[in-house]
Length: 408
Image 1 (cartoon, rainbow, N blue to C red):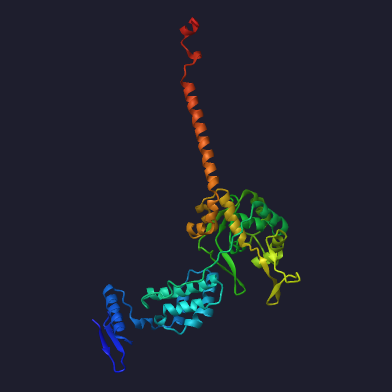
Image 2: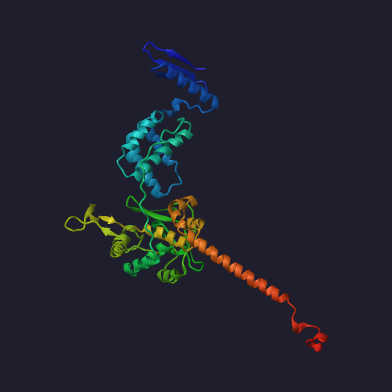
């Protein structure tokens, strides 16, 4: 059992021994606080949940670096995002703190003071919480003080789902250099990085399948290759009408060549496609609206040496992915098929994003059940009628003497 001693300075010192026999102590201003703490220590020792406070003296900065170094399964894009969160936000605030000294209330105040979009704040918190969760598993701290933090609410933007006609209108407006890309995005649902990384050898046109095996993204200005977001290969079906276009596009290319190539060769960047073709087409259709000043002049902002227009309503290639999901669901695809098509980790994720579209199909499903029921019942009736007719006596097959006798 531990002991409590009162020092000349008026403070109370709780003393105890760790499970391996080392002596530890902690000072308190009030005796009842020391008693409560000591009671918790003894209880944790009994249940096996005791964590030596000395193990929590490691600084968070080096701990975060080691944590990130051990994350071997991250895509290049995710690793870059984690590195940025640690370097820009986590280390400046917590780098010199012993992980055992970080409190829940301090974390809450820190999160509340980050002046970024809610989604960005949540991503930073997620990284910080994962770092502390590893410290818990390693026996450095007894609990993760980043859990149960009040986080800013993310207001989901309304997804835009194009119709078949709208997709075809965009394909027509972007012109022959880009029309196949528009249709391919809208009817396969691949992420931009997956489409940009797509090689000729991944197109199995005989089976009408595209094999999604890798992705490419700009990291610090350099196009970086890596695994897909879900770290898994998948196959996606290609509609019949796209096959001749794809065959013509890749004719004569080597298996390792890219299917969709940038204007100067190499990987096609999303921004290049947007600026050169997609945004002008979307503007003409009213899907994309530029912001104008009081005199009606388009507003732009400087990014380096480039003036980038500002939009009140924008159009991004990712909207074709949403469109592919909605068109597949409208065509009768179930949630598991859509999940596999989009490469989601789980059907739950697919339902979270597109569940309302399945609800829109309730009448369609009911109508289909009506039609299926009627077809089956009609078939059954015809079959039973044929059986009854077949069971009736046939005058042409009566015995010879009956036929000679004739009617009575």
